[in-house]
Amino acid sequence: QVQLVESGGGLVQAGDSLRLSCTASGRTFSDYAMGWFRQAPGKEREFVAAISRSGGVTYYADSMKGRFTISRDNAKNTVYLQMDSLKAEDTAAYYCASKYGSTSRGHREYGNWGQGTQVTVSS
Image 1 (tube, rainbow, N blue to C red):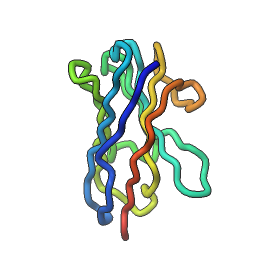
Image 2: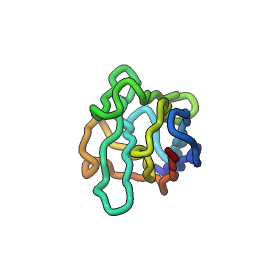
Image 3: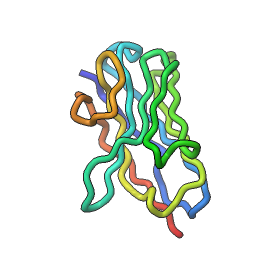
Image 4: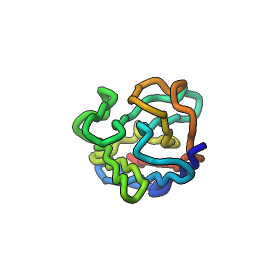
């Protein structure tokens, strides 16, 4: 079992930046691909970005490409999501998740989830 704790959310204005962090414990962090997902009220959980175990391969949802950057530091058991040029439609609860082995865009393939951190972007 991997325990995940997100931090870094908050209230910002459109055009601002935020960096989310997710720290893992309980298992060997580098055995797990990591993903970020988000969910807005009344909407389904949505893929944001994913990163491979080594950090060498990353995937993004089309609407986040060029604005969001996922990275990880295996020495610190932490995955990051740098979010730039934030828009009002980025408002959501953001969740990190772990998946043993290879990366995936599908949230159902991730077995462990953090509690989420709220990001609110005012326009």
